[in-house]
Image (tube, rainbow, N blue to C red; front, side, top):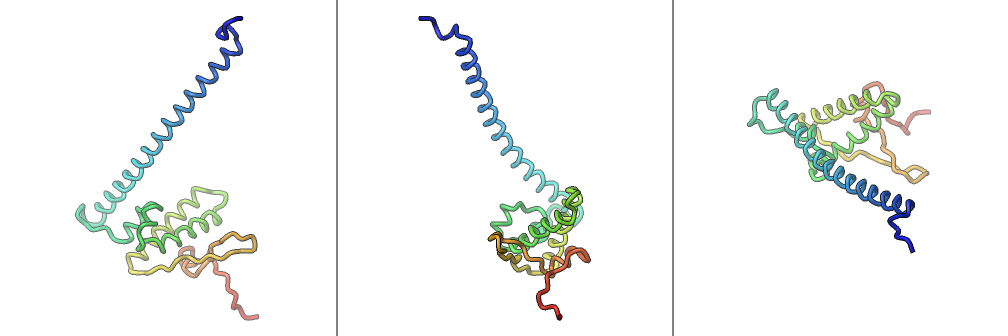
Length: 168
């Protein structure tokens, strides 16, 4: 009876198992690094936004406005902040509108979404209160955003609400 270590097929299988284990180990390390990078990028974004805001608007001891908080908040932070949550639902709609307006140009879509976020932040700073963005279920059962007059304000001349009360 011969030893399995001399069999080339068994050697190949052992090598494949070792490579698979190494790849799984690397994947785990990459995931760990990615979560650290995500955390660091969030902190860096807040620091940069805070530095820019402080430099522009009066110093490091300036209290951030609700608009400042809206501009720099992540989706997770907004979900925990009732003062920002309703406004953020309109930002989510604005992102979809921007993507639809610029289907062939994701860079323009992103720029448009950033402008909408700044517009909402400015409105918050001016004291505007936001209701939750409206949705409706279509026949396919999927919820879809409803274009509201506020979205016409965000995208003047390019978005229209659907009016059901038109005269015939």
